[in-house]
Image (cartoon, rainbow, N blue to C red; front, side, top):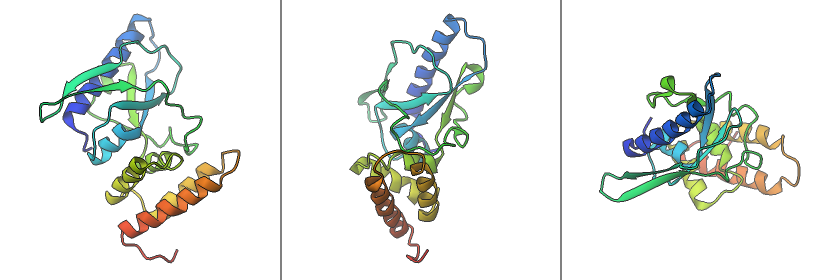
Amino acid sequence: MKAYPELTGALRTMLERMDASLQKGGYTGEPIRMYLAGGLAVNYYCGTRYTEDVDASFSHRFILPKDLTVNYQRPDGRPAFIYFDRNYNTSFALLHEDFEHDSREWAGIGNEGRKIELRVLSPLDLAISKIDRFSPRDREDILALAAERFFTDRQLRARALEAVANFIGNKDTLLSAIELVCQEVRRLQNRPTID
């Protein structure tokens, strides 16, 4: 884990607010799993950038508390904040059907004491989730994960094609993006071009 400590602290505060809301509502069941995606998940694995929005989905539906913006201070003294992105939706993201099963627990963030268990998409599924939008930032994130050698271009292509198989509609743009990013990953990792 390479996450910035100050970001981790802000995220911990957000989780505690969610937990307090669940406790106040009388929830006594098994912990609800929160599956973290987006820039904060990339920061967890690579420590490459700050982000403001928290993109996540949950194993259960529940009413989120209103106050999910957390202020904190960066090491350089600048004020910053994170907020829970209520518009994030896994229905439209390119995700493998096993993304929840293959997610990883964010150890050391206090999961054992809460009714919210924070999990992070696997590096491979995180990279795949960034292919459909494919903005310059998404491409940087995919390459940052690839630079850490979490996956090869072959692994990325295979898993992404499995994910695309579950989509309905014109897949041409997605397939082109997969090929393009796999070429970039191959070059980054200095892998031969013959598969």
